[in-house]
Amino acid sequence: MATTATGASPPAVALEGVGRAYGERVALRDVSFTLPAGATVAVFGANGAGKTTLLRILAGLLRPHAGRACVLGAELPREAYRARGRIGLLGHEPMLYRDLTVRENLRFHARLHGIADGRAEELVERVGLAARADEPLRTLSRGMAQRAAICRTVLHAPELLLLDEPLANLDPGGAAAVAPLIGRGAGPARVLISHDAEQGLAEADHVLGLRGGRQAIWAPAAEVQLGDVRGLYA
Amino acid sequence: MRATVSALIRKDLRLERRSFESVPAMLMFSVSTFVLFHFGLDRGSLEGDLAAGVLWVTVLLASVLGMNRLFVAEQEQGGFDGFLMAPVDRTALFVAKAVVLFCFLVAVELVAVPAFVILLLEPGPGQALPELLAVLLLADAGIAVVGTLVGALGVQTRARDLIVPLIALPLLVPVVIAAAEASSPLFAAGGADPFPGRWLLVLALYDAVFGLLAYAVFDFLLEE
Image (cartoon, rainbow over all chains, first blue to last red):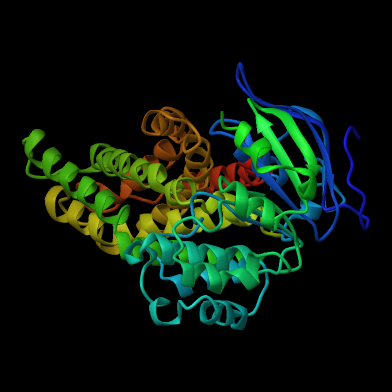
């Protein structure tokens, strides 16, 4: 393993020389790090740096073309089935059906994960969506849809959260409502993509910087300066 | 797996009830085609082979519209990702989608077949209705199985509207042959001829073979 951060074992994520290409274009090259269980890594990088590709590899939705990827002790893609139901992915899209209500969407996902409907109801209350829970998702504002998507992400109490700009579209009240579910101290290990350097550094134990698909920074968050992160976008 | 299949079916039927994306289009296509045949052939009524051919080619082409839309919500709204990350048997998606497409076909035929009888058939199937129902159900099952497989393949390509009919129609030629052969005597001019039960067996065999084949390969279609 090229770069390692010590912590409790087994690690939530262990990557060794991971690469991924889309045809001729290399999106990710030689990424290596180990994230201990319960820790948070903030991932920074300009558009096209490979952040979303990294997240989808960790979610088991993309195969790495090079290297070794191990998530929650499961070797990907060979043992991806062992990680299913233990990862929560919050991407750019809410992964919810626009013509179903918030409640119907969450109950559907609860059934896929074998969870009682009560958990969905509890989450809807916690994020302040109870009054709108019976409205189709397409009628909700983007902030409301983001709250619903966060409920879907944590519905099954995942051990690893993969969060792509989780606070996008949320007002301060919304951000405060979801903080106990996906914020620091929520419990699960987190891979957090952010373009807000200050907030990302404050939330993270480790920092991964990507530039052109390559690993430019891997260090404890305390050792990374704001300027280092901003340099990734230069 | 039963709970997962049930959840997927209920979700899809609810989405169709809200969006009306598939069944109305399939139905409009079927009825419009019968109207076109009614005037295009310039005949008061059809019987035998010709009637059976018109019915089954229309049903098959209408079913392509349903196949094209079958996985669109999963692809465009992240349903595939949510499903693939859940701890469930992936073939549950195949079973659920095949059942949903089968339900769509039955719903369309509840209106389209009477429209076919009114517009093009003289006399109607009359006493042969149970046999016609058996042919319809077995043919629908075959179309649903193959349509689900091809729909899953097509939705991952950019040319979905082109790929689905190009793959599905040749694969479904045996269904059209068997269904037309089985239903042709039911539409005979002088009342129903003896029913050729062996074509029902052909349809049942087709359903079983393609059902098992689709069940075996569907998992791989969902792989990236």
